[in-house]
Image 1: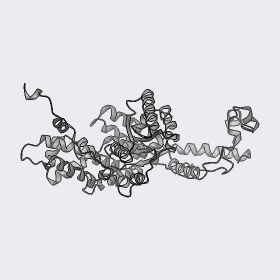
Image 2: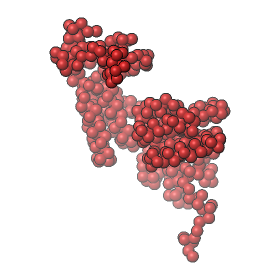
Image 3: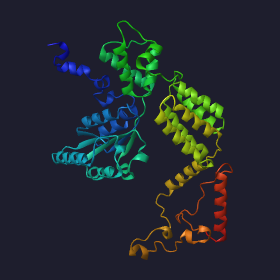
Image 4: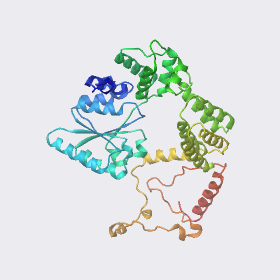
Length: 437
């Protein structure tokens, strides 16, 4: 029989495992890049030392070790480990996992349930975790790349601590490459500049840097050493052309943002093209343009946000390089739009007051009274339906009595906000005339 079809021995199987899988840390202390969590004085290390774990949400970019840390955590805490993915699991799968955890608990062993991509579960599915978290059937560890504040239920967040995983920095990625070389028993066939370029290509992703290293080893002939150009040809991607301190990424996005804010479309286009040329992820740039639309243009031109989202969708549809023109169009639109940070400022001010007065109740006259008891308590008394009032405006107070009326939003005299300001001034005049506070 040909060797090609000979059955593999276990050692052969192990050799075929991806490098990133073979180099998974065996203990929390071996985890690199997340020392604020796994180091001697890190949050997780302290939890292990205390002998008490609570439910957690791991929030961070791909390739930062969320799955690995969850598995190590269960081992070092002596917990059973269950893993599911929200992409492939449904209600039936959850029920099965919960039942298994209950049986283990009856035998005196608790279960750490790791849920990858937990933000993919809908609200009803997220709610199903609450009972088993509360009674201690499972310790939930959810992993997400999305902001938990927006993607997860408030009830779930109130029962879990959010721990932030950071992108790997250059030193951390360099450590992973050194470990890879030790495991392989050979050096990466790269000169110093190419090695630095490979680290930049990984963009903070530990799994990516090890996958790139594997590609280089597969491609290299005996005695061959790649320079940066050779590396780029081998892996078919380009590293961002930023300075070696990695400040370039942040400097250029800052320059782009301030050029847009300063209404200079030419400078904004220049920095956008600099980042395209450096190999920056176009969708990252699309996200930043959306942020500029809501922070610096706001309601002075409500179409700014619409156009930025449309540009992002156009890039998704066209891909690179054709889709880059849509982002350039959005960039020029933002730079030439009237500017206002009134909503941004109002939001921050309202958030401060909301945090300081989180228990203040809305006035009873604007609350519904679905039951006789609530009606008897005065809910809904005195409410005036605005559409039945002159000018479709009652001028009632909608703030909690505890804090009184506040003004957060002050539109500017530019763009569409000039019209909004006229409306607000008119309503303020009616409110004064009708004696409403």
